[in-house]
Image 1 (tube, rainbow, N blue to C red):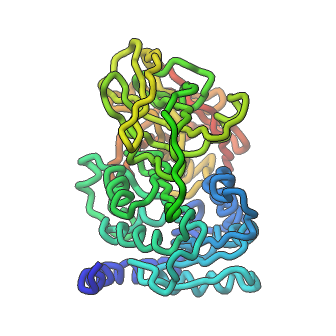
Image 2 (image 1 turned 180 degrees about the vertical axis):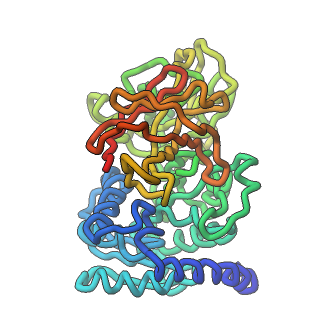
Length: 455
């Protein structure tokens, strides 16, 4: 990036600094978590612990690569007032936490005083110039880039974060991956940020010569990508590729793969690939002569390892979505390496999809958007963000089940500003405070129950 281009991006980032400084002074906890306008320190920090567990610790073997967590240096991008930083410091040896907002950093220093393995730093918002090259074992960012209004700023931050990780290190980040026209037309600001979708992520990984380990949630507001910095002069040992096992991505023991829906993803367990060279950008899965890019290429993930017997040494896992154009029937599947070698074909049964199960992602009240739901008053209105709906969803074929109550919604639709399906409803008269469960039904298919506490 030229200095002129950088200055142009910094000018754009000044708006980010101004807005997030104001939000920090007004109510930092609310703008960081939007859970409740009034949050205790304990409740606020508990949400950070859950995020660290879900997005990092659940895949710790990939991060550790045989080392102890206390040996690792971590860069947290967009730390706010330290909601996750405290918990990262409990696990990893050294944590550098950065934020565009000086006000957020100031408050983080107050909250995290006494944590000797934490360094807090205000950054420009477009790069991480004070930080050294090839230093961190892991750089991590969650719920940050979704608020950046300029895709070029996002690109600049990811590029410079990659500079700071050492060879063999990982960069894991979250972006808003929605690229539908309705969302692209929404005016972007420092709350509703620019999209940075699968195509941009794949292109940037290629430009950086990064090993693209994974890209999950493409096309959604929760798009996660993991880059790895390749080891220089690493020995590359390969043999002829071979598909040793296959199954549905969520359950390797299920051998039939639907052609549509959330389960239309196939896992392949493959031998003969270079762990250093192969990635989700340069491998191809050939399905009936159509080349498909994987969404994951890497070590065997835990849920698949449990389904396999014998040694997993020298095996790699690929996950590949089934293209929407495919019809049920037998498919011939091969893996093509970066050198162009093809594995022997295996026959995979593609089946008709079952109706997707809807899923309640978030429940808010319609008053202040908090997660506290009341039996009476303004906070007795519900706003649900839901996955698993489609363009046929309406108030006619969607309803809620709350204990013995059937609740008909007042609104069902795709909200472009949030990039998700939204359902609005009113709690019925006579509902009593207490613990209960909420489900959503779409075309007679029920979502899993979600616990709901009514005050």
